[in-house]
Image 1 (cartoon, rainbow, N blue to C red):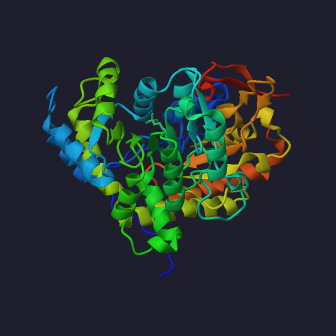
Image 2 (image 1 turned 45 degrees about the vertical axis):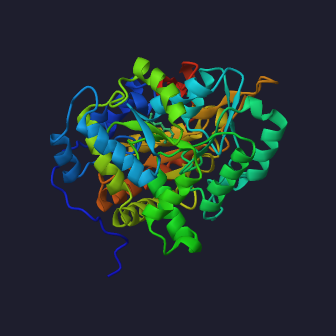
Length: 459
Ligand SMILES: *Cc1c(COP(=O)(O)O)cnc(C)c1O
């Protein structure tokens, strides 16, 4: 048999979706000020806006939720959650939060002061924003290969180690309260980070006495890529790879809405009990008591089971192949797909797809809107609408390195025929690509502007 992949599950519950007409979608897009974040989900046929919290949970997760303990303090569900984090990730201490950005907010507001710097291979939008609101500076050193969307290399999410070390020496350790790495590198096309790079990043931070935290949202997919792309790890289990990755770190922030395959939840994990105490103060004020952190017992149960299901190798094998298949379908539809495809999403180079639209007119947003009109498929831009900022010295705009359109794939939700349908919509949209117009901002807030921006087509 030569089928490209097979789902290692069968479907027990279904949710009906409605295919709208092109006229209805045109009206919906206009009403949404040309920003698909503002389009009601009911008007979307296939929703690839994000893989965050959009997962289908398993029968085991739902069964565990029925057994949840909703006690305010010390619930049984908390201890099951804590044991799963300790067992799968290997950190002794954990604090639950309602999602990943709250984990970041708790960690940064405890450790980071105004004017300080936090390095990362690349910050995600929420990590960046959580630093900016503290008047701290997010800085990034993903290897330059990540900016070439056609270069085939196994670990394009890696940290540029020489640049990181140079930055630390020039900036001074007293100005760097914490160092990070993001696995997989979501803002750099979901590319994985190699084990060697995680270890060496850790060695550099630790040489200068800087605590090292992993943004761990897609740790399981990153571990799978290490297994299939680094020959040294081909016979090592994903569980062992995960343990080794985290063994180099002092802690992690996690959005459970990703690789723990749930709809809501997150946590901060660490080895230092004293740091846990300091963050706990903050947690009680903003999220909730130490043993629930803004989540219900049900949520904690779903995470506890999901952490194990997320590192299951037959699931990860399917997950990577499913994503790669969508990449192939989009390439055949004529879209310039970022290569190689990542774990949770396919990224299309919007700048290459629509060379007549400059970064200041958001080509990837324009492409995403055209795709929505063509087939009711919703995606999101990871480009200059999300990441443009001004040079602190010259005041000139700095655009994102690439104008990417992200097709994020909810876990265990869409079948292969959904992916083929997306390919047809993409082909339709590419046939008239030269007619797609750029966009300008009519209104936008200062921080995380892409979520709420109102846009209009340029003439
Ligand atoms: C989703 C995500 C976050 C934030 O998590 P939320 O649960 O959405 O708050 C942080 N970092 C990365 C890399 C992410 O993908």
